[in-house]
Image (cartoon, rainbow, N blue to C red):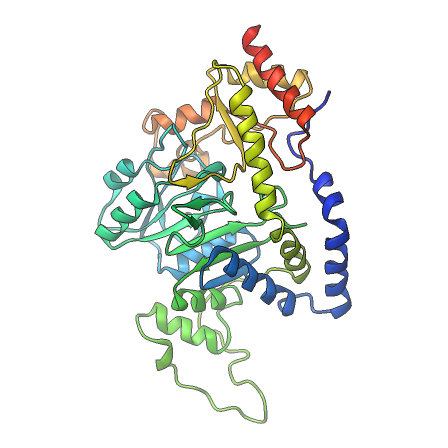
Amino acid sequence: MNVPFFDLKRQYAAIRAEAEPAVLSVMESCGYIGGAAVEAFERRFAEYLQVRHAVSCGNGTEALVLALRACGVRPGDEVITTPFSFFATAEAIASVGAKPVFADISLSDFNLDPAGVAEKITPKTRAILPVHLFGAPCDMDALGEIAHRHGLRIIEDAAQAAGCEYRGKKVGATADVSCFSFYPTKNLGGMGDGGMVTTGDAEIALILRSLREHGAGKRGAEARALLDGGTAEAVVLRETAGGVDPYKYCNSLIGYNSRLDAMQAAVLSVKLGHLDAYNADRAKIAAYYSQNLCDAVEKPASRPEGRHCWHQYVIRTAQKEALCSFLNAHGVGVGTFYPIPLHLQKAFDGLGYSKGQLPNAEQAAAETVCLPIFPELTEEEQAYVVRQVNAFWES
């Protein structure tokens, strides 16, 4: 038997009858950028998370960049984050001219260790950027207390955490700003790229909407005033002349072209209606694995005050390469996220980190293996995965 690590074709087949008319509707409207489909998805996503503002953008990396800038992170500032994540987490910090400062993780859930975060704070620290890695919620109580004590923003990377919860709240409503990716393989994935930033702060939302569209127009002028320490209300309105918008080609900020396509919004609106069911199916698969994998397997833990959305099911072993080779030879697809921790990536040589400084992250990188987990994985396939993993240890 061959068990794929992930199979989008199965999900498409299940939602085809809903998704294709939604996309066709956008095509017929000829409103491909912005418009009703995007606005409807932003509204539905905000309602789903129970947060005031949801601002869509081009992808998850740009969501992080927009969020950092909207929170006033500037060149020379420091942002504390995890070394065990996808490259974009730290790349976004560097992209706005700030310095990524890496704190070690906890091996129990692979997320930032709050004690390590507290040790890294300096007068230059502007924000903490935790990642709810693999769909497991971070310890937001402890991180929130540290941020409050030092007057810092929390900008959370929730790219893998759509539908995840912490103390009864959906992730996305648990920080100053939250960033999502809708890359096709995510729990809520589009048929192309897409991202979203959520916040309860109206001023941050205004800045986000300005930055994603070149810092242009009246909104750009208001955003500039806010970032300069003023108020949006202080912006002097220009007079309309001959029915022409006086702000149309007036740019107050260096922004980006980071807009969610309307067709992606239509697809994501369809999939959002299935997200809780998708995550429930993932949770059932995770429970089956945890109950049936042998005791030799180092299984993932769940935080009691949170609800894991099981973007990945991650086991640990010192025999990582041997296990992956064995499973591949027996037709089981596996993932190895992330084999090189961020502090040891060549792109960050200039930060001066060396091997051994963040031992938990380095151990996780050397030992983690992700097993197939997606909603359409059959019971027969799940049983086969378990048999093969157990067979590796028996052999």
